[in-house]
Amino acid sequence: MVKLAWLNGVFLAADEARISPFDRGFLFADGVYEVTAVYDGRLIDLDLHLDRLERSLRELGFPTPPDRGEIAAVHRRLIVDNDIREGYIYLQVTRGAYGARDFAAPAIVRPTCFAFAEAKSLINTVAAREGLNIITTPDIRWARRDIKSTGLLAQALAKTQARNAGVDDAWMVGPDGFVTEGASANAWIVNQDGDIVTRELSSTILAGVTRARLSSALSDAGLRLQQRAFTLEEAVAAREAFSTSATALVAPVVRIDGLAIGSGRPGPVTRRLQGLYFSAIGADPARDAPWLFQES
Ligand code: PDD
Image (cartoon, rainbow, N blue to C red; front, side):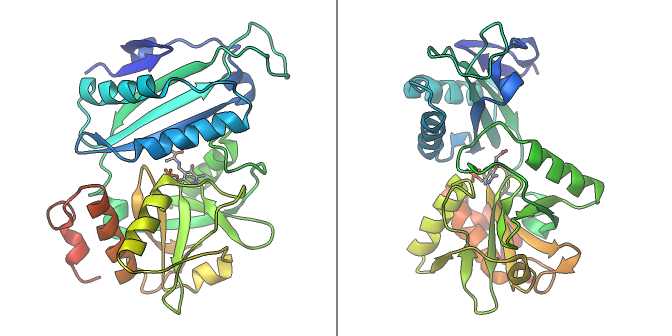
């Protein structure tokens, strides 16, 4: 099937989309993006993603964001025309092309807007069932990680290093020894006291939409969350660890740098939080994730 994409107001076959080599997204990574999960043909938390997109654009000084109603309609059409039941929609907005390479941004912005859809299992995945084996890498990124910038070289290198090491993913650690976040996910632990801990929001991490949704689901369930930084040492000594993102939802982390976390299997708190999150997005854990109820 031809994959349908959307570029600057036009729906077209994805491999026919053409962008100028002078696009500032290409020359300077002068752009931002969002990845919104699709479950059962529905967009998960699109409003939160569009809020974050608009914030990222504001922080980069874009005068006006793309029309929200149009972007939402594009997302919905990409789901229908690409027949996506489970997967995600990728949206990127750059400052556009101006026929020259000039570091300073133009006063009048003609953005490039691009979106495509990808079918992908999100709930019944090996990662969700078995957990992730991860390495850690130094966090070498810029200081504004709250902006969802397309400047992803550090994350791409971290994930390449993970793949070359034969593991699934990477978490990044600052020079102070504190975990910042995953290469494309927020990082969480359940410590030896049973506290659920994830780093507080600041410019050191991305304010994850999955993180926000899981935080409210767990507080609705009467569980408490500690929002504070934790060290790599604390993570390795934790009972459980997991990552959250739009593309892996709530994914147990069972090994960090070769060391088993807890029993080395997804733990009971992570299983409970996966169930809470799956229910929060309208899935039926008993039907869609029966493995949640098996002994770990
Ligand atoms: N990444 N932190 C980083 C650095 C991320 O890149 C992501 C998401 C997250 C989690 O955010 P959310 O829950 O809103 O997906 C945290 C997306 C999935 C990506 O780059 O593909």
